[in-house]
Image 1: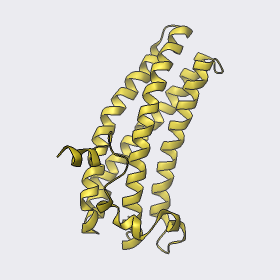
Image 2 (image 1 turned 90 degrees about the horizontal axis):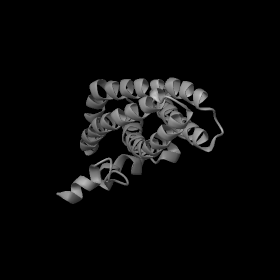
Image 3 (image 1 turned 180 degrees about the horizontal axis):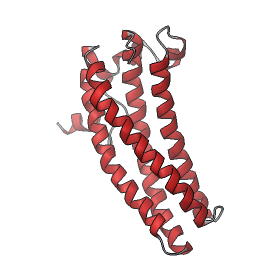
Length: 190
């Protein structure tokens, strides 16, 4: 049972099991943009994922800049407050809409990948717990009393961001490789 858990646990897997990647094998990523069903729903989905990745990259780089002395701590706190709030709010809303509306409908469109939607839903719960750590780390930076304390808190926050970034990217990649081929194969239009 531990092997099955490793294959599906967000914190341990390198990819979804091959049995759940059947549609991406049939419709590989490099063919998506040319697919006749590639339209607004797929484009929107991928753009949201790109936004999350971009925000993570930006927050990670900015934490590194304050640690290296390339960004003043006061500026860093303002940017973190804006980017962190946007990231958490948008990611939580995105996952809620997927869990409540999209995943149940998409899961019925191809029985071969139904189990993948359960895994993606479990990822959302794991990511929610990680976002609590993100919030705690960001708040430590925002509440730090002086510049040296900001830099110290930014170091711990940077470490947490790096871990979160890896898990989020794993989830987004797996989600894309399930959701996009289901949409392309079925013609689902949201």
